[in-house]
Image (tube, rainbow, N blue to C red):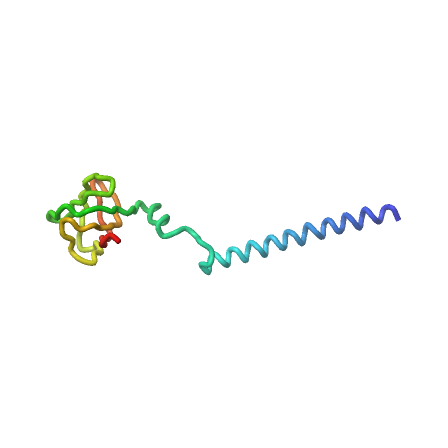
Length: 119
């Protein structure tokens, strides 16, 4: 009789371990499903762009020369933004206008992927 109580407790303990592992696995699967369906925040678009070397540049257009805009960034530095036919722009910008550009650095300059009016 005394030997059966520890066996029962041991079996109950093992059963509890098995159920908690099964519960954890089903809970983990539910969380993965939420991420796949987009209900939980994953990496933001901004974080993904940063990993690819894309950053935002806000500033004021100083001028336009041949194939680039000259922009004074919000940090006060002057930047030449190279543009070409692949640069997405909602319009042509004039000196004095404020812009927000998605930029990638290349060789010795900055290439504008898109340029929009600053909000």
